[in-house]
Length: 513
Image 1 (cartoon, rainbow, N blue to C red):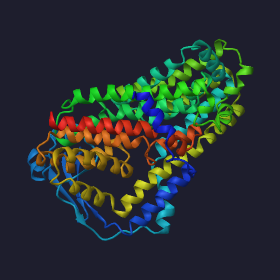
Image 2 (image 1 turned 90 degrees about the horizontal axis):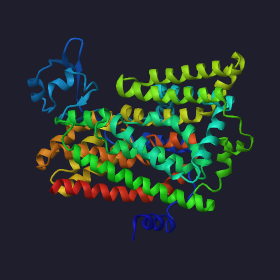
Image 3 (image 1 turned 45 degrees about the vertical axis):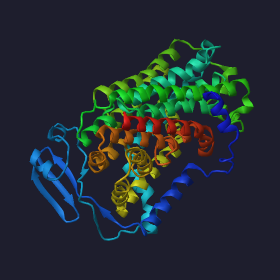
Image 4 (image 1 turned 180 degrees about the vertical axis):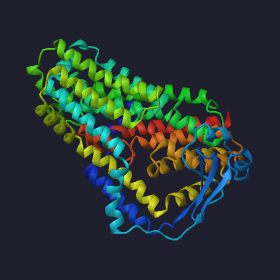
């Protein structure tokens, strides 16, 4: 039986997703409540952590007993059993606090009651202000460009140009986004692309799920098989005390295999939908989505004149500038957000929008994505609640204990699932690396494995679970596209199973070859 038939049978014979799912906000609030309750039962504890202070060139150890300043030397690192080269700290590669192996200890319980539960989403929104403002400013930019009619005109032109070759949209989009993921961790930066590309996929005869999957799966699978990504592979390898090039060949092979499987999976579904729209998982809301994305307005397409072409060039240039800035000049959210804000102003000038109308449409566009902003903040609040309850380190400590004494093949695949579980608690790839690698990397030595295997288990475990992780980017992405979480699970679970099997085989082969 071929790959496409397997995908078809998985989906057609599944009854796992018949239940009605709550909204994204409700899902996150339920998870927040469960986490708050768990702090009453899971013992509190923490690791001492190590930070490099570049101002006085000293190490600072922070624990519940206070702080201790030590000289920034290799001897200090050796005495703490931290197997990370000194230059990784002094050179700025590792700038976040890392857990010190062997320092876990229980502390006074910190149960989080009702008021802590109520404050967690607010703390999360404040903590995630950088990405929230990015989303809101992009919403304002979309509002302005919709006012000009440039977007509608551009979509109609592109749909006509791709007539009969629409499948190229899937291949090109997924591949390019996956390349961004493997090289510089193209993740949060993908959020703006849904509003641009999903309407193009719909106009080409597909449903919104095809566009969503091409962007999201490209990002997740690309990041999962990171090659030179500084936010995951390089920082994890540094934290494990090895060169980031160790194990690179295997990760390149995994990238090719997993991206190819993802493209074939999306193409298979897209072909069914194009042939028979009733086969769409979103068939009950396709008309609503066409209205939402303005695709039904094709019957009144504005002319793609010079002014609208200039507007589209400015619009696309915003993304090009963002990608160049992030990859070459270490830009982050302030710079990215400013780029889109300036883009909106330039478009307003080109189309000669008066000040009052500009402000009205910009605020309206930002308001359309306010729900997405709340979802991002509430998801961040879950991690804050766990940290306040001091149960994150407890779970990490016991997770590291689970693998002791296991056979090599069982050990590495167990670690894969442990990393998947931990990514629910710590959705940040760089945060996961600096917190867990000093704890997990030494386990490779006791199991007689190369430490690059631990790095791979971290990458693949986080990547696989990020496909459905409610505390990651899937819920904000779904909220932008107006697709339910249950619809996404029904669509993606066959591919998730296939990628899991491929990953487990890959890790097992790496252990024995």
